[in-house]
Length: 368
Image (cartoon, rainbow, N blue to C red; front, side, top):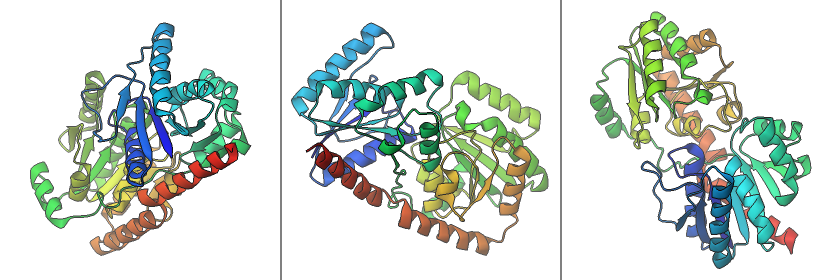
């Protein structure tokens, strides 16, 4: 098959990493792959050996038209059978381009329960006929978009994110080395990962950690994720006001998340909304106890292998943090092994690649 993947950027986010991982596996299976990226190359973005076309699309009518024209030229030379797009801007671009490439099946993927307000939902609804099929990364996301009539129920299915269980595997030596680097001794080290954006609701996490650390003073929190200066300063002020500034370490953008997870004793996600959080699955693959808010596909991924609490409820989140810290190391270890088994059985990247390949073939058979 000839597959063109379209994504808004290759910035260091979960959706972007998922696209690259999928594309690389499809290339390894002998399919012809190209990546079409709406934005220009960024200083910080995921690396890949796949061929990449950056459209440098600007946020103006003329800029969008110029970007689509460049994409059309590139796709005309590549002659894709499948155009698989991810997130709202790329989904819209792919649907338009599909009109000029009738030989290709357009497949849209929604990565979050919230990809924008009414205008975007209307755009999804009006262009639904231009897409052969739409997938969502969680049942929660699929149900919401169908309920909003942004996607037709007969054209929507759920195909969850995949986790690279080879990259995310526990390593005792790496754990010891990273704990030394972070200056962690006998304290219970929590880790949170993800860009500092509204969806991640770091204020909720900080308030919960402050409450929990009163009950368990020997606890620390590390946060790894890209942050704007003003957003980071606001969070630091909040941590100071809560009296936990000395217990919170801001790591910024990191590319060594497996090592950070090794160093951690537990993983926490305090989000206000999500699609299917890769970070949660990665922590489970690393055999870590996880505490997360009940948003998007969190419960679908965690199953019985984590503590799931309401969003925007720092008291409930704090209780779950304390409960994990007061659990015996043996019990935490057993729970961690069960979590990894769940990821291996239901969310491994190789298994997901099989599912995508079967879906691609069904779409092509339907067109024939």
